[in-house]
Image 1 (cartoon, helix red, strand yellow):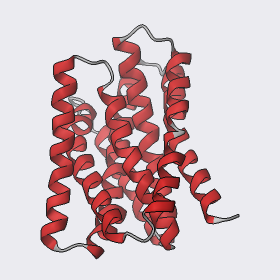
Image 2 (cartoon, one colour):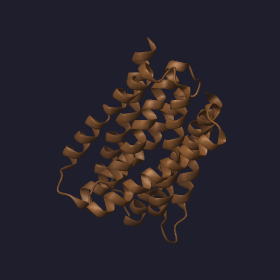
Image 3 (cartoon, helix red, strand yellow):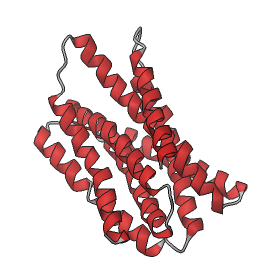
Length: 236
């Protein structure tokens, strides 16, 4: 299997975790009700842990290799600011798809970086695929619930839309593989930009939603999400 085919398959697998998460959310009914609520919060927290592990184990370590401290800090902060501006715009537009926008805004730059990492022969490519899938699963879960509660879209329409959006991964991955493989500083900038944005999203959107009064299991979901990244990092 050539590397370009591997990029397409890898980014598609990571992207299809979005409709898979939505499918799980559409059939998720756990009794008693308190357990169902705790499960939902745990899924959100797990996604936050996976996102943090992607930042700590792949995106930032690989990104800072090719940039000066000032450049790295600048791109990281710009990513956070860009996600904050997007968040403000979505709030003022009163859109029902803020989670959907957040999901795509980190999936696309990660796919770009993944394609470039494959082209450069980086050892972290498969770990990044794993972490992207782990974060897209709960993000798809959460985005589905948001759309179902705030719109009249059917579950099949939402899941189908997520499946179509998963195709953006291979497109971005191929672009990174073809055009960015010989531009390590650009790939590094994308990684750090995405890292800053993801970190903003974790503390602005994910962490607050994961909190459940007088319940402690959801916080362990974040621990489990991060430890999966640690295991993958050590194995790969």
